Image 1 (cartoon, rainbow, N blue to C red):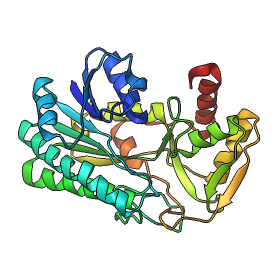
Image 2 (cartoon, rainbow, N blue to C red):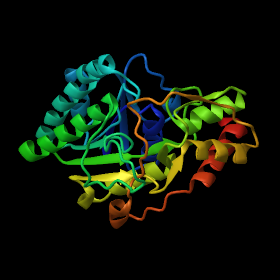
Image 3 (tube, rainbow, N blue to C red):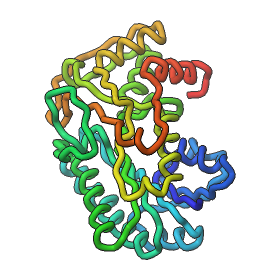
Image 4 (cartoon, rainbow, N blue to C red):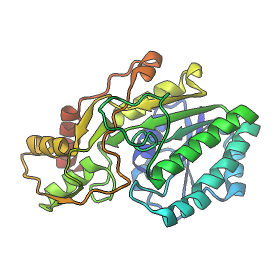
Length: 310
């Protein structure tokens, strides 16, 4: 398979690039903006291109030159707390160019795999009942809205132009290679601050529930779905199926590391949903999927960091 990863030097993308390129039977190309760090993929046998998603001419030339069969789209400039100004920029630089990419993929019979967001596209729910793929999408943040726009555009292109697609809605991915100093990813950020003896800032009272997935499980699920023709033209949640509160995560980090994790509780944000757990019944009907438990996942992540790999 000849694959183009858009955003292939990021946390999830780099793990996919590593697994695909090192398996031998795949040829992997990566497109990243000129200013983006490529440290995660620097030593991988991939074809690296520098440029923006909005450069349609460059993108189409890569698809032709590399004879791409599958595009994996992981690009987003937003995080859940972003406002309308950031959304406008996302629409101009990501959403609109991606719709043009969908047209090109349809014309060239290239499959498109899109990483959406299982944590934000569904919106608010007061109960702990897991969200299934058939539930109504009702995002309450600009981040979730942009993801919904992308999903609807993909389905529109499938209906009207025959685009072959796979939409993945991952829960909160974590694990080796994640930035300990970033602004996204509770487990990584909290671990980084704990090791630096800094206070972890939490929006709200810490009882908000999220679904978390270890990065290796997300990557393996993606590869398994890619290998199944019957998985295409469908949407899958990729999570653990189990919810944990923010306070649970802080407690587990403390149990695993033995380090006290000081916490500062801040006023809750309007754009944050209170509970998100993903049903994984559908993906289990398609592939063998047994994600790691949160305690073991955090233990492996912590061991990775303490071994000097972060």
